[in-house]
Length: 352
Image (cartoon, rainbow, N blue to C red; front, side, top):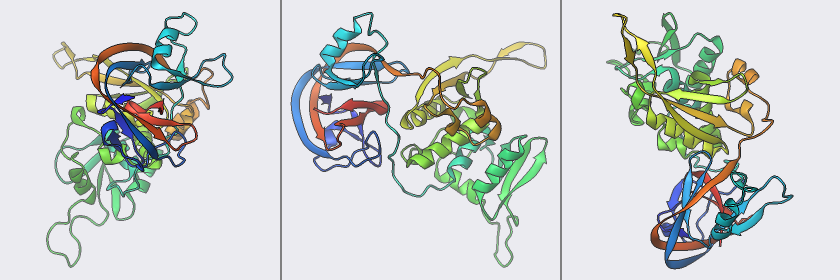
């Protein structure tokens, strides 16, 4: 059982355990249909926090079931929280039991106001402050092509000096036969999303994108990684931003796509015009692992640099189980053959 305030991913977004009802459509581990087939209130129970290797966690009771993997097992095993806690005390299993991620085949199909890659690119290397024209910075011709393709007809990229480009209406702000100035539709989209005018340390990914279908979420992530992401010599994928919220949103994106993501904070420094060493804005670095690293990029040079697959993939291992509180709990059963569903922070867990 899980507390009533535990989050459960549905086909189109998030709900809570306490709000679920028989017949509700849930997200599943592989995109196949899954519905709630029964609900079992459990009353007040002692609750434990299950924490994982990339920092995510969820809560459940001692009897709650988990499907876990170990490198020497041919098939995964289903154990309850109490048994899992005992196993973690053994050196053999410590930090070596993991849960498999979901495929990410879920999310709403509502239209989004800005192309996903364009949004990701602007959150990475776009200037959203000011009014009217939106700016984008790049020295890569392919980035300009990707931005132009995503903007679509009627919009153009106009060189503004060095690596800066203004995104404006193709025929200017004055349309023949129409009185007054025509608004920039990209700026209007940013305003509708609450992003217009934000400095770099306050950027975020709107929830309509975070809860959208997989192609939209992947498009946003590609835009972000094509601009402010990189691939280390040994193949690890990183993303850096001055916005703590944007870092957390990228982490949510990666996890929703079946990846592993932790965040580290770093303090950068710079030398000002007077020659003094000054502290800059904190940098939040997302450390990303995904079963298919090349799929995270559109930019050819980064696709080429990313490994086709990991020689040793990062697993979402169980790191600790600790008691937290007493709370009203509930169990559910689901129709999916695996009996798995997705809870807080995209942790895959087992039904009753």
